[in-house]
Image (cartoon, rainbow, N blue to C red; front, side):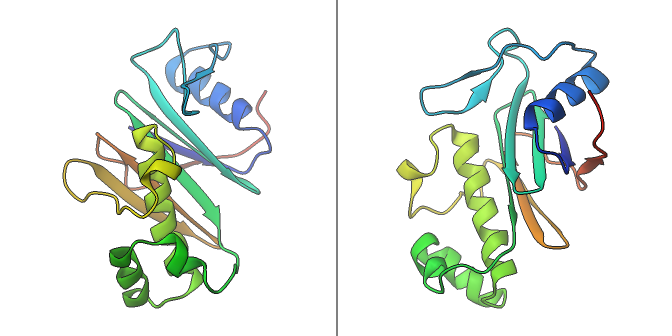
Length: 167
């Protein structure tokens, strides 16, 4: 599995750049979505990917197995959001992590990456906690953002950050 990040307005441009430089594939293959909305390449079933974007950050993971990613910029929200959005177990973890917005986004990106991994999206899995067995996940953090990857392969320790300006 490889995980790439960039500051760009276009996740399609980032994905095209990654496929060209890492896999020698150009132009960007046709994209489709499952009925639940998960993107995939109909002509490349052996290559799985997932994308997330949040304001100025884009995160992309590519794998030979199903994968999900999420990246969020840390910003204050309604005070009641953590209790509403997190399962009881996650809320206990949130409190143990300091009960602040960075703690919330660490847990939230983990949950959303898992939901995207499953291909079901968030609604059917609301209130559930990502399983700790059988899957691999990793959380990432930077100045003003949190991110997570979930999949059937071990995520890398670091995100490969790319500079924009590609075509």
